[in-house]
Length: 145
Image 1 (cartoon, rainbow, N blue to C red):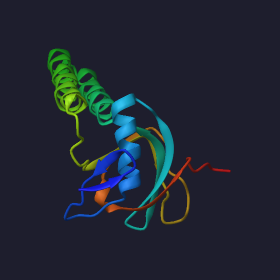
Image 2: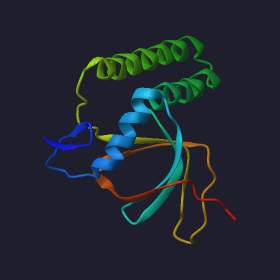
Image 3: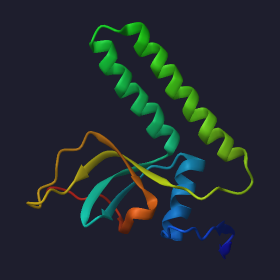
Image 4: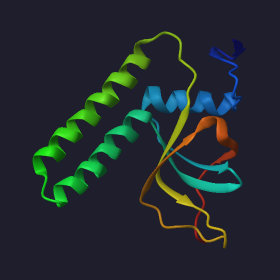
């Protein structure tokens, strides 16, 4: 392990930005939300960085909402409860550990993807990507102006 400041960051076979991982740990541990723009595979993705737990809960809400609209209310409620439980099991367990495991994914709310023509796609999507695939990043979100 390599030490950077007070936190330990592991070197894995798929290298990623240790500084971004520290930011993600703060988001996951303290519920911070911060605007960020990522370069992934030559494409820019811009949105609000959120915790993995928040992502899982809201993904479950969105997915179960589709079931509810299709008339499967009982299945929707059951599915939403499963996602809530999953978020608690995965992220509460990580908070309880004294040392962080290396993170694998990064999560955004209201993500916008810059299309091939340079136009920002509308926000309103939840986005999840591999941390090891992020080529660069900056704080703040891209605007249409």
